Structure formats: structure tokens, C-alpha cells
Length: 205
Image (cartoon, rainbow, N blue to C red; front, side, top):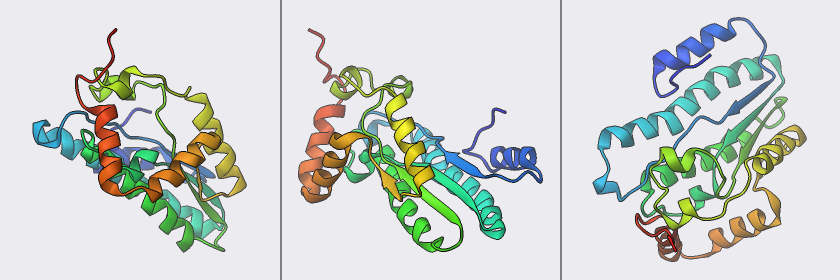
């Protein structure tokens, strides 16, 4: 079905579809970005981003996760991002929403220890999807530059979820980048994000 997970009505519709079916796996992947400087964005669009990336994700996870816990089994895969480790200059609301999901994933995984329910947070790097077009970020260095195929993070997330791992970043470069981002000062990382995502920064040569 197609539904808007930024609304309670949309999540309600998905829950009605499930009815009494047992959900063994929840892949909470709904989300989108929003480019440009925060004060240059339409706040209605910012609000919709937060409702989709954070509120909708937590709502469906709460509803399905309760049923999993009651049954004593289930797997939850949340799509976070390495962006959640970066103060997101020119994608401030998006990166902050992913920081929320990354943090939430670790917390929920701990709360569900020994319940039979596992939580995995996938933290991919730049991936070649419609994300960049939808976020209006194709004129940025990051949007126009090389990216990973979506198959790699999808498989890495699935494999990590099936293994019961709490988090994964595809490939050794993803793992290295995650480590580096946790070490560097936030002011430096914000500058790195600005370099990649400042509008008009794409190399058009």
C-alpha cells in the first residue's frame, strides 16, 4: 500500500492493513532530505521532514515493536545514517533527524535485550538514490559526486539485522568513516558537511 507516514492517519492505515498478522521483520526506511541553509527553507517542509523521519518512524516502530515483544520474537531495522554523526550544515534538519534515529536505535536495542527482539541501525554513507533529487541537492558537490550503489547498504543492513547486530556501516570505508566522525570536533565536521552540501558547489566542468 502507499501511505504517508508523516501523519497519524497514514500510520493508522498501515496498522489496519496488518490487522492480526504477525510481523517478523520491520524495515523502517521512510525518510527524505531537505537541502539549503536552514533559514532559507520553508518551515512547513522542515516540519514534514521531522514528522516523516522521526515521528512516523517511532510511531510504527512503537506499534509493531510492542507486538513483537509480546510475542517474544522479531527483528527491527532502522535506517539511520552516517549523516547523523555530522552537524549537517546545509542539511541541518535532515542530519539532526538521523542523529535522533541513530541514537534511538542504540537505546531501543538495549531496552529489548533478552526479549527475543533485535534492533539494528543501518548507517550508510552517500548512496545513489532519488534522495538527492527529492532533497533538491543535485547542485551540491555531494549530490553531483560519486555514490555507493543502493544494493550494498541494503544487503549490509539486511545481513546485520539477521545477525542481530546493533549497527552497521557498509564496507570497511563506512566503518572507518564512522570512527573518524566520532573523533573529530563537531565544528570541523560541520565544515566538511558544508563543503559537500552547500548549494552551487557541484563541479560542472
